[in-house]
Length: 248
Image (cartoon, rainbow, N blue to C red; front, side, top):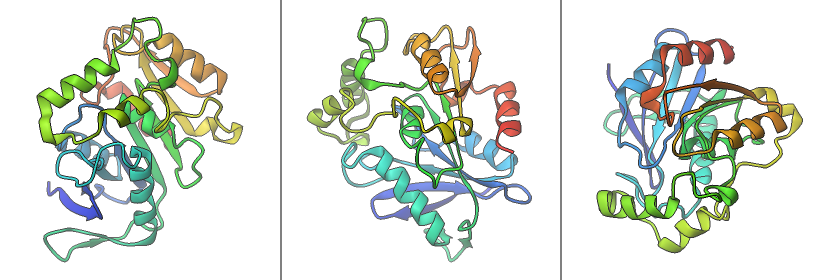
């Protein structure tokens, strides 16, 4: 398995071509704190028949710039536009991969699930899959029973140092929903293009809020129990089976 690497301005991303005929492109929206690479996730996406594209948001890991400036949603849109317009070129060779006519899917977990949902009404995205997303930053932890995002900020700054470069002021704007936020109301024509997974034992987000959001917007939601916060490492074979059938 050869994982390739490319760059769009400040954004570094890895990608893996599909096994067999391509069904499309799955663009991964990572959580916080994420990982600089996730070969197992890319391999699984590739085995399902998709180009797997795994970016690092600006200001994180090898990418340049500043995290949250611009919004991570802008990073994802920038990559989508690039894929739609140009061939993917591997950084260290002359290998080229043409994805221009392929449908784009977003796969996000946690923070990345929120990034993906924030692009729900973007017509360039065919479908969205979100695991354990924050569905509204404005009311997150309003009852002090969800993850404290200011605590998370301090943890990331202390534990990861320059791997996450951002201003405290922008982080505070983010948790007020001023940087990006999933739309409170998804366009009715897009409801069938969104799939949400959540768990009833999630200590980081209130699953009742996710359930209410899905019901309000008539979005398909799959609930589990005893898995906790659904990071990519917790995606089960059953989850993948549901995804495989749903993206058809």
